[in-house]
Image (cartoon, rainbow, N blue to C red; front, side, top):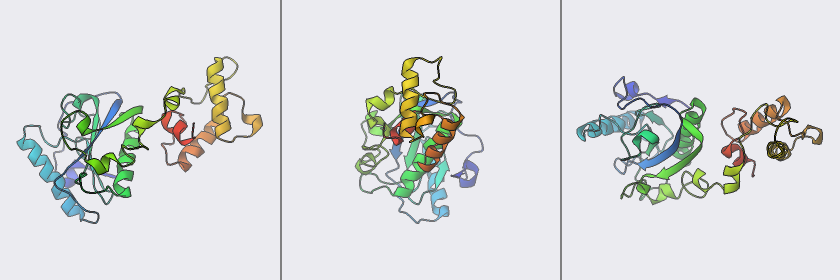
Length: 246
């Protein structure tokens, strides 16, 4: 996925906001309300919309565009403050979260699959770059402030609805994160059992269900992650456990 940079839409070379470090455990989802752009608008129109938001946020004294990233119905992604910068999108949560805005009116418009996929790709990129924790929560803006944002249709989508991260079963959250080298004869029994369960769910050959996360298991995990549209890193965390149906 390519994210259209600030300089491409006419924004500042340096992003507003303070530098932040470490992965964030919270992703806050917004909608723009206005503008509300349908699928198929030109990139010229999209860029003008992002620049207009930047100017409006400047007028509010927020130092420029407050969202970390924006997504349009056609699937284009735009850099706001980007990675590693404090946003200005949710009072009291800016330094501890990543803010992503869908450029639609979520109170009256259903998000397209393209925009949902784009937001998922942004989050996946954040995880792979270390800016978002693999164990994170997605929340609507109205959870923190008395607003309609991001609208009922966005809240009902897979980004925040029954398929979203906040509703993963507790059993998935409780499973250990596994990676190359875990398990084996010197590991505790719970870890060995978890690796065996992983190998079973990967449908590995019985002789490979050893309870040790070696190179053969690593290859199987990466192949599964690729086939499932996940970040391919060989690390079995909540998202990979969920995709395995654990």
